[in-house]
Length: 134
Image (tube, rainbow, N blue to C red; front, side, top):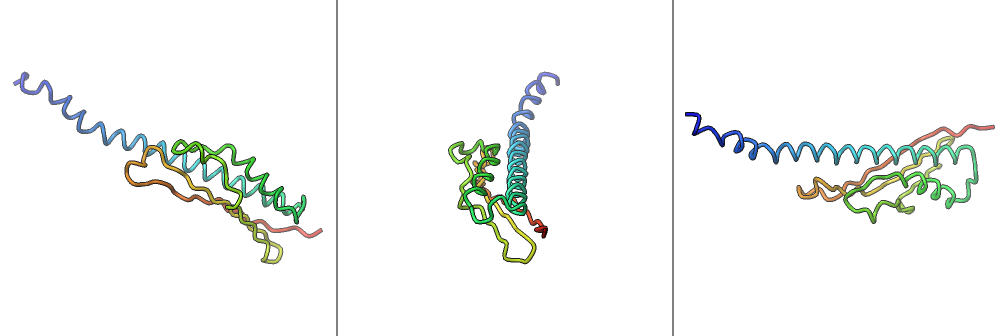
């Protein structure tokens, strides 16, 4: 009876290993996605803060530079050439009285889960702050 069960553990391990690998690498991939989401949110907060203290309200280049500099901390294992933030994905809206809204979008390229058909996910960091009147 012991002879017939010798390879059973190896077969069970071979069956379960892909599922365990999928769970492990999926967890790592989504942890990186959430990290990048936090970076985008922090970058939008820095841009909004700079805007409400009126560093230079007419110079959009300065705000783009602040966001791009902050987003150098993005982690993207899927396509390292796309780690830089595209300045055209930064939206600043101050049309609502006394409020400013900053939204920064980024296409996150999945690395571990790309073979499942999840190629990229657009993540957005958004901040709304009230402008103080002096």
